Length: 396
Image (cartoon, rainbow, N blue to C red; front, side, top):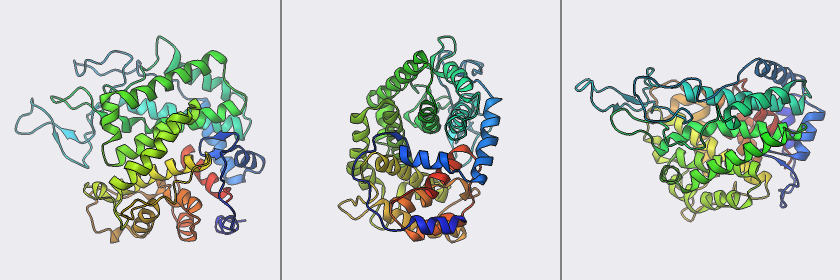
């Protein structure tokens, strides 16, 4: 059965799940995960095999391995450090504070910790996929090595905060904005729940991982930088909620999970999405179509997590009429025809990593979104391919 025919069959009417799943694997419930494992199609199997093989040969990584030089930061050796991407030396004052050029990434900024965080997260997900869906030998052992190095080993672990994320030379040693760097940890957590379902990790490592994420969630929800990000009013706030939701699932912290659902209803949708579906804070950017999609991806990941855990955020409508459904309808024509976008987009628009048409198509039972999803290119990354499988095998 081809992708379009499969989606057509999946669109047969059914009741939304009203009770929380007994077991959940973040964006998958246990029943769906079992269906995927028992009948994984050859194309996705081949991609998953390749990704798992690559992950078996990669890593480990640590924030301690590559550090900034020349007094760039006062961060300690276990502190994550990054620099804001859009900040540059001031030609009028080369030794003074940096200035912002939105949409223009400074290639000379320190990126090593962010790159390694993304590699670790992607590798963990690929190993989780290999261990759970393919029963591939070596995945659990390699994952233990990678995860212990980044999160648990006293010699190499990352401190569970982002006090030094997205620093700006001459201005600040770190900002709440830095929390956008840890969006990749959602992929890591997806890998963790798959690894545990595949046979588990060692007790000491499991306990260490849960302590790390509990400490990180505490920092995200109580520190000034964390709370600044929560109320930033744009895609940073949406991804803040999606992150906390994902970590809460791993921690089995129902209170933190419900808090993100409340934040969605009371703050995120009312403050970010206008009645016509537009998101003005994203449209003000120089790469406004890309950021609009990035924000809607965050909304969709949060809504998907909620749905798997028995809460319907997809159909929520704010008092002024704004909703994720409206945002999807508003943005979809421009995703399919980027040249028609009426706002600024100074960089290339890359549709292959956009997931909202698939996730929202299932969540909103939208033929239009699902049909569009089948026409878009899909990246061959572990996250994009797992979402592809999740969309194709969803029942609603």
